[in-house]
Length: 185
Ligand SMILES: C[S@@+](CC[C@H](N)C(=O)[O-])C[C@H]1O[C@@H](n2cnc3c(N)ncnc32)[C@H](O)[C@@H]1O
Image 1 (cartoon, rainbow, N blue to C red):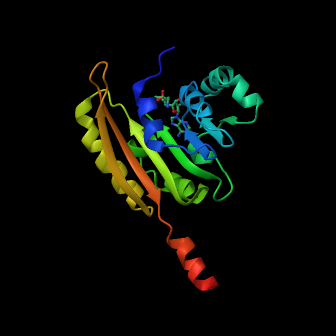
Image 2 (cartoon, rainbow, N blue to C red):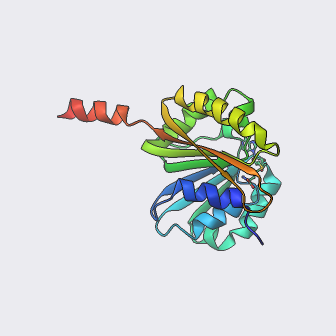
Image 3 (cartoon, rainbow, N blue to C red):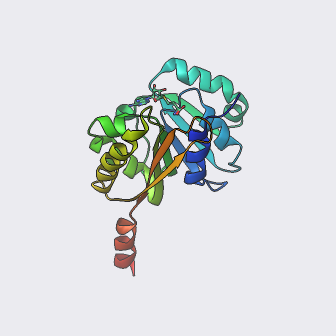
């Protein structure tokens, strides 16, 4: 099965270390989970999707990885998911429109809490209308910076079909950690 370029591109931007704990939001049929399983050694990938059908397909695709404990797949909507603080080093989502068509403040606050200080959040799209990439980048950058992330926008064009790709790569600020360290010393 061919892997959509938006997924390889996003995983490259995410740049997981072999021991990272990664969360995917809206994993669909688990194609990016399979990519990550090939790159992680001691790390894990947790993936959520609100569609039971999608998660079942993702489980089938990644059976070996799930059995080995390196992938955990859950039926959950982002707004209802819960994880302990600092559970993940990296979080990503591809083509999950919630982050730009609605107000994602509540969800981004939760993601920020789940990430380690300095952790990375990548939100990518392959918009059907390439002209919307700028609008998406602007809305998502505003949303993540208002939640204390530092953001940069990456763009690309797919080799096949010449479609536009846009990714907002955001880093959770380390301010909280620094304040704690200063108090301790
Ligand atoms: C367009 S598909 C993209 C799937 C995959 N990321 C890809 O790029 O091939 C969007 C997926 O995100 C899921 N999704 C959308 N909004 C979600 C939310 N708020 N919480 C969890 N999953 C969501 C949908 O069920 C769907 O499987």
